[in-house]
Structure formats: structure tokens, C-alpha cells
Image 1 (cartoon, helix red, strand yellow):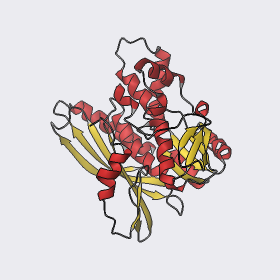
Image 2 (cartoon, one colour):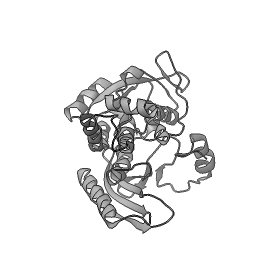
Image 3 (cartoon, one colour):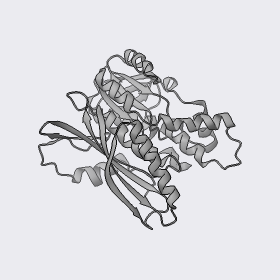
Length: 322
């Protein structure tokens, strides 16, 4: 089978259709395009999500925290605690383990979330460090926000820029003597690591009119647009020229021969709301770049650029070509 996530068809047929839902406390069951679940407890909702980190060569600890917290933020929930599993190859050193934990602790502190448990194991089942985190979060509003909540006429907003995490990974793969990027450009792309959290924009949008949110991970911006459309059953038209892509990301994408719009983009968020320009202005006051890139439309539930290309269901992320 191909490397990366299952196709949405495989996910639905092999996994999701087999699940039985018998508990009334489960408010949001798993489905394509929905990354978080919610459980109704005596005193309100708890939002939960789980994610592994398998492709990163550096910033593993930071991404472990941010990717899971991002899912919670996309549901309009504030992360409270993380359960983290570390699977370590026999070749790992104590220094490497300590460095990953230093990143985890720093990222958790930045997101104001506690590491509350997990599991650590050295195993020949992996040949590099693999992590997995489960986040427990509490909604900041009365409702659980899901990609299913997108409404006809909503503006589609993207935060930061497409291919953000992918650029980090590609830069890390460059040979030490590579001249693909200048010293200044290498410093610029490494600064992307500080942008891989969407907690701030997710919580702000949840309080300021977001109907649906989806953090842009595997499959890139095209995959996230398709998944948000599939979850809601509503089509999207977008302007590809309005999707921000950093010049360094374009340079790395050209070097490796990958499509930046299909490139893993943790740190970027899609938000559907009724006044995108107002939301963009609000996000900018927080120091978060954002842009309106399209609209939710009744066009048979498909995703296409204005007057142009149709977006197909996401395939393996472009990062696996690297």
C-alpha cells in the first residue's frame, strides 16, 4: 500500500464503517474530514483528538504537541492535557530523548497545556523516533465546532501560508553542503517551526463567528478544502492566486518537484465564517496573517478554483516524494 494516510475511501470502508456507536455521551463520531471527537460529560463537553508524527526529521517534540493541540483548536476547544507516546529505535541516544522532551515541554508551555501521561518504549519496530499524542480539551463556546458546520455563502479564510510544515521538513532534508537556499532563506524557513501552532487563531475564530474550521495537515490546502467540503456536503470555489505560499516554500517545492498546495501544512488553518474580511482583520491584530481565498457555494458539493480546475480527493501527501 502507499505510504501515508489511507485514502478517504479506504478509511471509510476499512475503518469507519466498522465502528459501532452506542454511547449517548459521544456527541461527534469519527467521519472523513473530522479530526476531533467530543464527549458529553456531567458538566459539559470534552473534546479529544489523537495524532502521530512520523515524517519529521527535526522539531519532532514541538510538532507532537502542536499537531494535536491544533485539532482541538479547530473544534473551538482549548487544550488542557496531553497523553504522549514515544516509540524509540534501539539506536536512540539519551541526548536525543532528552532533546525531544525539551521540545515537548517548551511547546506545551507555549500552548498552556499540561503533559498528563503517556508511554515511552525502545523498540526495533521503528527505525527512527515516532511519537503520538492524544489531547483533551474544553470548548470555549457552547457548541462543538466541526468541519460539518460550514454554511452556504461562508467565506473561506486561510491563516499563515500553504506548505508551512512541508517546507520545514524539506529544508531539513537538504544536504549540509547544499546551495539551494541562502543562509538568510534557511534561517527564514527554520523560523516556520514557531508558526506550527494554530491554537491562538482557532480559539479567536471560535469566539468570533467561525462556523467550521480545519487545520491543514496531510494533503495540504487542496486536501483540507476537499475534506471540509466532504464533511459539510457543500461545495467550495477558491482563488488559487489568493492562497499565500512563502517564496522559500516555492523554491523548495520546485527543487524537490512537489506541489505546495498538496504539501503538509500544520500551522495553517481553514476557517469558514460569514464575514471573512472582518475575521482577517481581527487575526491581524493578534499578529496572525490570514487571507480570504474562496466561498462556500451550492455547486454539487465539489471543490474547484474559480472557473477552473476541480480538486480531487487527497492522495498521498507530496512530502513522501521527498
